[in-house]
Image 1 (cartoon, rainbow, N blue to C red):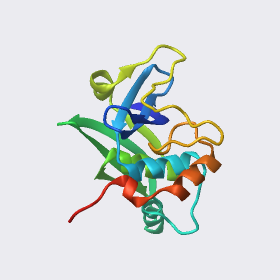
Image 2: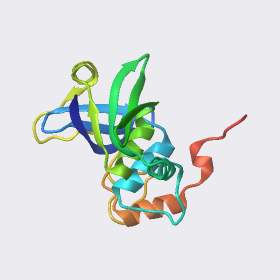
Image 3: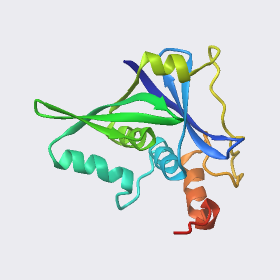
Image 4: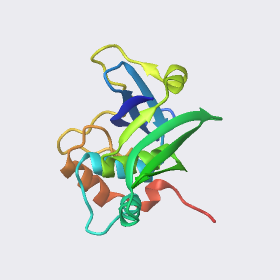
Length: 181
């Protein structure tokens, strides 16, 4: 297993979908995973240190795990099959170890809240990662919002907590599209 970390969040300009960029610790390979807007917001809020007065969905899982006497020790992003990434939550309770099948996007948001470590396999990095030149960050993003600027595309890497709060305050549910049951 290879330790990874959240390098940044971005927006894929071709699909207008949020992307979380994971980077191998101490290495040049990055693993982009396309995620949904809810997971992107949950990850962005945690990276910005923002907390709501009431728990959000991604806050509930750590509360449940702790309430049941467990600890999320790590998240393993294990494979990709048919353009779908798979992950496992590894939870310990005393001497017991549990693994739970999970989506990487949710798992990353939960791992950030519990300070659990993120890992992936050498095979996944070899076959799905992008190698970046030293000192260069992966760029799947729209331009970073400058102080006082706005963008209709959504939260971007480089937002400070106040800019993120303002973006979330102005968010119109219609921006996320209509949902027809």
